[in-house]
Length: 235
Image (tube, rainbow, N blue to C red):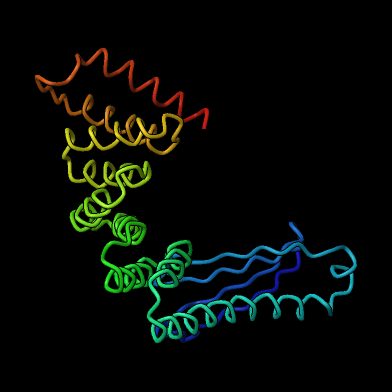
């Protein structure tokens, strides 16, 4: 099978990323990845039509174009970040943070959400998104603090309580996690992630033989776990 590929490091926003693009005749696709310290932050897959495959000379050009497009998109993202920093617009900071978050650039995302909060301390969505970024960074205590602030400002955000419950779960604050996840499910009973996280919580408590006077019996919790997993599967 024909194997074509490009690999190189690029400096963007004062950071070093590795870009890898490859074509395989077996799948007829070009797949490009951007890595940050070995972690994938972006991926693009392009199908190569039959004519281009037959015209072997067209493949290297197509491969190079996809490779350069990945680099250009990352450069544009950090260029926009510099412009937003100058504008000092909280909504723009929040939107840009969500874009960084979608690319698994958690530090950059958190920086944008913090900038939004500095400009507008009552920006509930920015508090929520900062909490999510910190959960992804596994900084659970800081995530809980941010999410609690967001909950005071926007008590009807189901996803806010879901991530608050997840942060508490990872800190083994099981009773608080159960309360937060139950709140998320009260606001949105069909919430897939909250049902899954509640099932995870119940499984951990059963596995660790955690018994508290305010909790239902283990058998009831096992049934509840199955119910939450079924709802998650429906989602």
